[in-house]
Image (cartoon, rainbow, N blue to C red; front, side, top):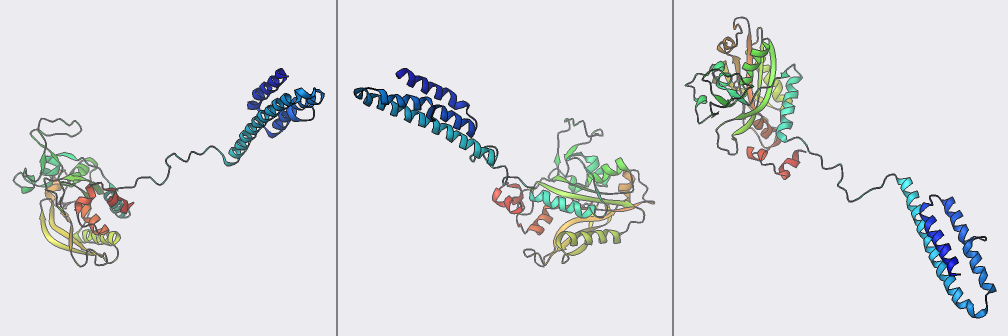
Length: 346
Ligand code: DAH
């Protein structure tokens, strides 16, 4: 009898793992506990036993029954899990990090830069790229800014060691490299490369030897604009900047031109915006950019005939516009990478 019990148990244990359906399970169960089942047959033998053997036999039969039931239960549970998985799809691990909700966003300065570019793209400007590491020629000489001009002083501009070789920048003899103090160098690069007429916009990083405070940073961003064609006048310049102010800051934005001096434009202006409807700014005028009509000397430096062509140029600080548009009153917040600050613009 012990032999029979072992045979039944090992058959049940070895067949159980390969059962993959309810039908197979029912058949499997029947081979043990069905009317013709091996367990049923074994139990029937109890009737033929002498009375004194019955208790031991009964105990063993009961144990076997329990073991079989637990094997059946395991199979049934496994089938249930498989059926559920088939309904809900692949297994889900709730402890894995989510794939949504943690996406990064553009930095507020990049967002404003893209908005500015978009405003000008709508009226036909295309983006020209420049170089952050420049030579004095592109930053100063070609822009009619002579060596004695204060902008070229060591305390305003970052000069690089002369021995350095940066193969992508054509360097004239004895010319020094600088981290560009403004994006105006792109005017020269683009006119030399593409000729005129042209209509370009060039956003990018600029560098000054400034001590950081609420409105200054040694590393900031500008957008340069240049429009060269025939019969371009100050009226065109004023019209484009009026359009820009309203697109950027809303219909309530106002623009003010003040006469100024820049070596590369004549006449030159500084331009202030005011945006009464933008709470924090109130009625203040905020200086946004420099601009003017391209100086004939600049055209001469790039081989364009100033009798034939005229143009306007402007250069603005992106952080300034970002501060007005967002109400942020300290430029340093933009560079601290504090998530509490950045999330506001997500
Ligand atoms: N480069 C000037 C600056 O950094 C801004 C500027 C003034 C750009 C007049 C221009 C311009 O294109 O015409 O302050």
